[in-house]
Image (cartoon, rainbow over all chains, first blue to last red; front, top):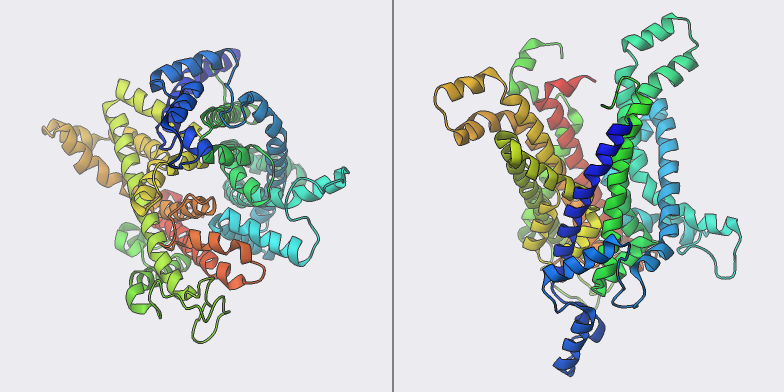
Length: 317
Length: 284
């Protein structure tokens, strides 16, 4: 296990290196530099002002030089300074990170719990009313644009019924936890809907496969209670493939957060990214994309490690 | 499975054993043809502005109502569908083709080619898709061809991995040895003997890719980075209507439902094709 972990961690280094090159190249090659976003594209700007501005940001250098500079700083833990706010990128990200983590973690947990319950129920009681409803809902969940679903929920629960706030993280002046949680409900639900749909379907078919496996019959033959047979033996085995899908979906959660945060004015990384894109704030874009990629890689590793924990047959050499 | 005749013949196995998939195919074909024939079917010209009937709810003259400029929503949904479905299909074809080529090259040449291409796949996989799409879509004043390329070039990775592992197992089969023994060149073996064996997963992947691409286009439109007005797509129609969603629900309902129905139908078709083309997965 130790050797396996060390090897996997070492493999992350070239991977991150490759990612940083691709991301840097893609961002730099985008037309319309930061000066256009900041100074506007008016005809009355003295070209020398633009040049001086580009020089000050360092974007007048060849891309390779810029990349090496950026890399040298990044290796020392310095992600650079934002073009538009002139604040350290790391600070800006850290400021927004808690909100995004809260949204992602709560929707992930919620989706995992609901999907496990729903998937198990659907598999045990196939073609029951709840199974049929869950099947229908999950097909809708996968086929509905995320932002449209968010807007519909906003319309129903905030505008029409007035039960939940439309957007933001808290009512101005209110600092209670309850108020904050109320703001979390809709974005959390929107972000988890797709995952509930996908994971519960996946668990359902995985559990249906496992239900007639030899070890389940053995467990039943041993005289174990049905609860133990299903809960300990069948579901645990059926969850193995689902867990890897869950970890892989963390990447999609990142994409979903961009949309959800925009719909619900949730002040997280996703919105920062969209703002930075419109301002051509290269260092911020670079920082967020790298952080996102890093998260994805870590969760892929976690998925493989979890495999071993859940399934003792898997040994890492 | 049961009847051995139906299992042995591909044509028979696609017979509507799966009524949901068959119905979905019918729905999709009807919508696609209607959209394709938009210039003939649409009740109004595409850009007909009628300032005397702004934001009218659905009526006999305008089955889906009119929008902020008095344009007929049904007309725009039909024309928008053309663009959305076109983007979806082309992007899926681009993504599948790139994935197939990458996967085949990696598996067939092995060693450093395999290593390089698979590490590249890892890199592409690890970068969160939507943020990268947002950066890429800023490259051009988003038009249909660039949208197709951008979405297609970001969705090849799963296909590449599937194709690679398929090729790795297929090329160990005796008939490939036989072909090589008879002097077939690498390219011929790949195109003539390996590719046809992978058509099943490729077709399924491409089908599901169409729905995925339509969704991505709508997400980008929502952020203002999709195909730009006045060219209608279902995505940018939704985007335009979001501010008036509460008071003018028909403006968002129709394009939204259009996306929902088409993506739903495509997913069912994809699942049905998977069952029909891959007997191993027909278990339940």
